[in-house]
Image 1 (cartoon, rainbow over the protein chains, first blue to last red):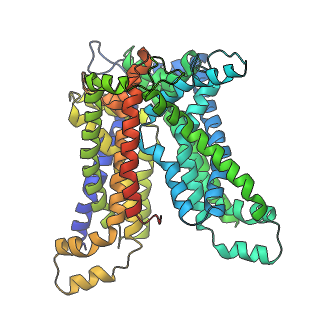
Image 2: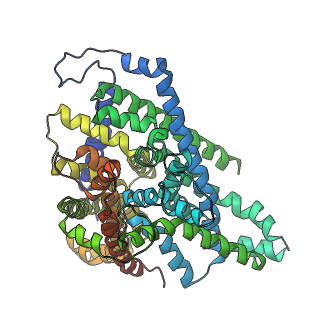
Image 3: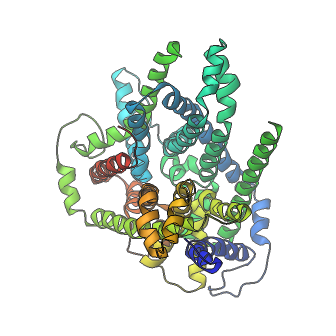
Length: 282
Length: 257
């Protein structure tokens, strides 16, 4: 297809130049801005400073917000695993034939509609006097609003990220050679033993990529915490949004974004090293 | 595994309930007269009527569709081109090129969006439809490259070699030999890009010019300022439209059903 190396590189160029110009370069520029006192296009003359990072390390508020973001992301990931893993397992190993394809589509169709639409749906389900409160009221149980709680944030995020977990785990389970299960069954292994000894360990790569695809974006989530969490939903993400949209302290916003990025990358590298170690063992 | 069938079905039903219950409620509320999304249910089409007069919401939906369509075409074309070049290069180079695709996928979109905002401000580029589109395509490219190259590398190179040895030009080889073989992944890449863009809130929120908004941005402002039941109506339409689009695509991509 590509007869000369030059032609091949020309084919790569549009996609990779695009990513470099509009993903990697902006990140580098943002890193630079995070060491400035003011943005270079403002009224005041900027100078080099570590103040933005200092205020992260000095103010307990920001550290608490980072902790909050990580906590929300962790609970979201756990929620997605608890619902998503068995779901992927059932889809891959119990359901057969045309039902498998149909149910698989049912899982991913909501993903094709807007996530903001789904958040709006949760608001009207959880609100004071909302559908759940009304339903419980029929049984004589009176509750206040379920909205603006920690759990409402998690529920919204799990709902948003569940398809990623189901997809990656499903693919991993589906890839396992059927011969293993037949061998285990013919040797008289209990299904539970087959699961513990064969299926689960072989599905771990899918679980890991699912965790990455859920946890990392969830650390940066600010829409669900803001709309479903109300005052409870202060995260590093919502503060970064405020700094850029409302208080226009962009250099501090850049620094906080970078703290988040570094934390996320460290976690990512940790996971990669972990998988390397595992694959070396086996 | 027979003994496990019943718990498996029960779990499946519960999970589907979790996924679809809020969406079902939203649809019901679209047809319900209640102003604050409450039961009792009284069938009414007021919100669909109101939607017809809600210029902002209609405009936002139109903008979302326009941006999703345009950016997906660009990302699919650019991504397919790069995917085609993935064959016949050294393993290490390919691993490196694949690695470059990971950060834009995994880094929280919030960070990418504010970084782009800073860059455009610094370069004194006004926020416009163009900057918005640039942002959306950046999010889509990694997926289109990955989706198309995954299928392309599994196809034997014999076909294109044969065509080349018979004197076909690269364009002819692409149009007559490669494209028919990889078209399922190209369609999948387009569908996926469309979903990413149509769903995207963060990048549109930070990069849209003032006075211009997309459906997700409109919903965000609406939730923050109070209830707009027309959202239920427009969401119902969007949901059914996406099912109508996904089903034929899935059929085409050989999900057998």
